[in-house]
Structures are given as C-alpha cells and as structure tokens.
Image (cartoon, rainbow, N blue to C red; front, side):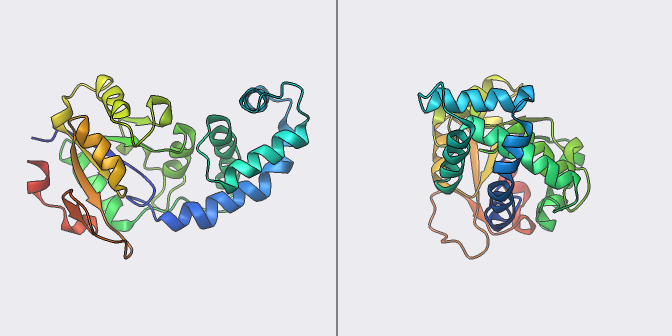
Length: 228
C-alpha cells in the first residue's frame, strides 16, 4: 500500500503557464535592478560569487553576472544560483501582491483529502525549496504549506535520474514501493520507476497522452486503486 505521495509542482498541481507566463517574465524584468540593489546582501553576494565560479571569471563585473543570469533564464537553465535569485525576486512579488501562486482546484482538494486520510505529502521540484515555499505560502487558497511534510529540489539530483529518487527515499521513513510519485513528465516518471517508486502521470491541458505509466487527466479521476 502507498504510504506517501511525492509530487512535482509545474504541470502537476499548478498550471505550466503560471511559471512560464508569470514567474519567469517577472524574474527576468526584475533581476537586473534586484541584483544591483542587493548585491551587498550576504545571500545575494553568495549567488553572484557562485555565478563567477561557474563561468570561470572570478573578476567578472556585475553587468557580466546579470547578463549571464538573463541568458540562463532565456535558455531555461536550472542552475542553483539562478534558482536562488529567482526565489528571492519571486518572494518580493508574492509579498507585494503582484501575483498569487496558482494551484489547480482539483489538486488542492486532492492534497487536502490525502493528508486528512493520513498520507504523508512531499514535494520534489526543479524550483528551489524556497520557491516551493513561496508558491504554497501565497497560493490561490492561502498558505497551504502545512499540507506537506518536506520539500526537495535538485540538490538531491536531477529529476530525470534514478539516483535522485533513491536519495529522496533515503531521507524518508518509507520503502520506495510505498511512495507514489506524481508528475507530468514521462522521463521523470521513468527515473522514479527505475528507483522503485510507484508512478502516476498527470496529463493535463491537452498534452499528448502517450505514456507507459498509469495516468489521469485531473485528480477527480484518482481512485483508491492508485494507492494499491
């Protein structure tokens, strides 16, 4: 029997377009001003230094760092210092009420029901843990962070590598076959399955439905059989 759920965010419990049409453009627009204004703050300075290391330019000026970050955003790179800075910028946006975190209504109802039924809920996303907290703290349904037991990002490994899921399982009080991983990306599900997890494919918003995994189109289709 399934004892815990591990869920992706983008495309699974929140609309893909929220990230691509709201969060990314906001971070791109705000990043130059934010980095220049906050470059002396420790957390921002650490990310700037990390960028310099990654591009092998220890003496790079702030404009070079900013241009590198903007190039990474354009290329949809999932690089830690970029993710950390995006999270800080999004925090400002959330706190200013510039937007709220989109959550599918059926996903919210599902997560609530599963937690109330005694399932442990975990999150694994390519977005930083900080960014995960922000979307849930400032969601369309208010602060829903108490639904989740713990959060994981790519510090445990890449989402399309089985080793990442093994690293997550090592941190949980459950065997791999007692955890159900929810995602909209087949390659992530393949990696999770290779690590021994159960899988469920969310195929939303007209996405192609060719998959080797059990799938649903929204959480109203979720049944007890998916927990067997």
